[in-house]
Image (cartoon, rainbow, N blue to C red):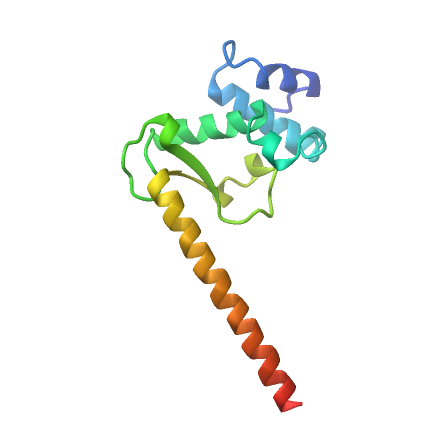
Length: 138
């Protein structure tokens, strides 16, 4: 069901009057059917993280994960949970790409970023090695 755009916005901003499932459905409808750049056109990344739009995504992840880290499965207090982006390709549209984000505890989030840095470093070294070998072969 497509929710009218003005209804979507009203639902998203009224956490006390609507369930997380209703707010999530409204955000999904807004991005998928009305304006895929609605959120991106209004916020930079830092402000986005404090917006009602981001809060809907976080609340939905809390609800779906039963307050557990999706990496280590520990039950964690809300203020110790973070959302980790596997990539930033779907930034501001995460509601349509939930497999690109994961709810994790502080400890796992730090570990994931350390792994990401190691992978990026390895990729950079590999790219450098490829460009050196290509220049030698030519």
